[in-house]
Length: 96
Image (tube, rainbow, N blue to C red):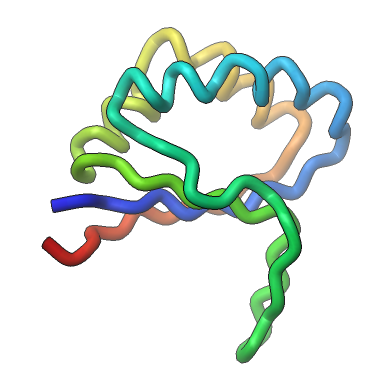
């Protein structure tokens, strides 16, 4: 069953984020993931949530999301992201 990773990234230093943006797509692809949304304009239709920068990924399943997040090759990029941004993320199963 496909699974989706929804991320809201609030960047403090967009220039410092460039190495992350350059390197991470290959790691996502390694785990069968693909970008569906990467930034861009959005519109809040209901509620109080005010995302900053939305990113949406599709993976083969939730295990693939965990494999990506826990990949040792991702660790330095995750540390970089955490040093320059606040992030909220959710993994959710799709419809088979």
